[in-house]
Amino acid sequence: MFYVYEPLKKLLPNGYYLKTGQECYYLSYPEICRNSTQFDSMVDMMTSFYDCNFSPKFIPPEKHSDAQVKVQECLHEPHRNASFCNKSVRSLCDASSVRMIKTIRLSMDVIDILMRRIPTLKIVHLIRDPRGMHKSRKKGGFLKEFKLRSHDAINLCNRYFYDFNVSEKLNLTYPYRIKRVLFEDLASNTLKYAKDIYNFLNLNFPPMLFDWISNHTSSNQKDGYYGTIRANSSAVANEWRDKLTRKLIKEIDEACEAVYDVVGYTPFQQ
Image 1 (cartoon, rainbow, N blue to C red):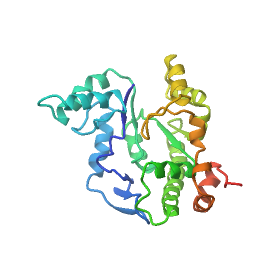
Image 2: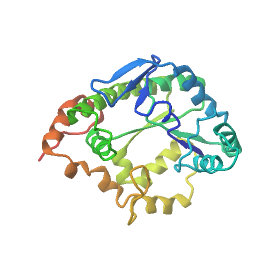
Image 3: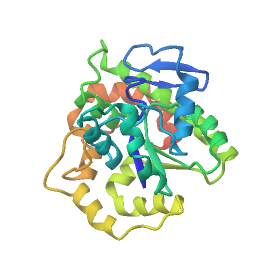
């Protein structure tokens, strides 16, 4: 499996793209959306990735995947640049039958464009309780721009509701190519839902993943905000109950009522 984490991060650090060709910034309230000068090239880059035809800076040098680690190591060598180092990992991509991207920087309506361009593309749409997402954003330091914390929840759930409804329509247009997974389900029963995802992707579940999942979801240690190792993944999913004030939880519940109705989350009861 050839995997790249957040390849659009440098193009749009704190925003996401809409099918209309706009880029929206979620750290402002209300959200600011404007015409993007890089939308078409972004779509081309995303499409080309699945042919292992990388743009010079598509694979960011980070520690989140084998490919990104190799690019990072390559850039530290003399006389190497991003173009050369991205090409250096192409052999890994060519050798893999599965190419995967994790991103939060695309609205679900952009997926329609990618589905038409890439007939074999499948989407795992991971969604999470807005209260848990808010807690995570707070921990990551992403709420400093908001005068009121509830403003983040309004932005978040407006996009959430839109993406959910687009996903419903896409499921009809592209049957069996989109799978929705709740973060809370994945955190509480990781093995079961991991197997479900592999089955959805028509992949055999590797035996080595049994130990990997155990070590990453019930470890005695954590590896930071962007890491994948958690002492107790189920507890992490529900941390918001103890980390957020009752007042803020109520404000998020009110802002996200429409999301709760379609997804099935319930307002907090003391």
